Image (cartoon, rainbow, N blue to C red; front, side, top):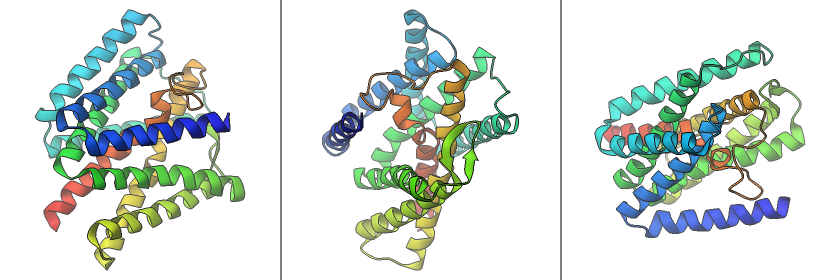
Amino acid sequence: MLIKRVVTAVILTLLASLALFEATAEVWQWIILGVGFIAAWEWAGFAQLNQAWQKVLFAVLTTVVSFASIDMLSAPIIAFLTLLESVLLIYIVIGYQRSHGRIRMNPIGFILFAGVLSVALFSTVMVRFRMEFSPEILLMSLFVIWAIDTGAYFSGKRFGKTKLAVHVSPGKTWEGVWGGVLFALTIAITGLWLISGAVTLYTVLFAIILAGIAMFSVFGDLFESVLKRQVNVKDSGRILPGHGGVLDRIDSLLIAVPMLYLAWHFESILS
């Protein structure tokens, strides 16, 4: 299982890097929309839309919204939608934990709305991020989020004692989160140094902001865990051997990528 997981991760990393640095803007856009389509298909299962035509309809609707949003959404609107998504994640995750897992998100419309919001915002920002900044900045920013996952896994295995949200995701611990944040901060400082060629107080402060966003991205992972518990499934899908579905790979990115985009957007205004 571990070998299959590693092989899949390596292949995905190579394909993603190739697309990020070599694809034209139009090809990159359609790649991201394709990823969003699959993610929306999987999300439909959380609302218990189990028939193929229902999943296709929801995935097409989400993709159309994503396509239109790429050109239509301004930075202030993206900031508002990111805030809305953040409040939604916090409310659901904390409420589920405090109720000891008794709160159920029964309204199908609410779950589908959360899916359109999360997937469309992610797809929009992934396209805009590369277009407005650079593949290098986008990749470095993604590495910061991946770093917290990696750091949390290993530090949690070694030092984990205090459960983060036992009713949402029993395996996560506060020690793991803090270890992940430290690793994410290290990656952020290193990445900014490679991009700018210097490490200043401003660089460190911006790296702390990026690491803070990485810490908040844990809510994206926990939110998907709540959704999966609602329908009693382990993975969102089976398209990625050893990893489950597309949503299982991008759950933490759904909220983190818009936040990262906004951080870079306002940094470019201030600098």
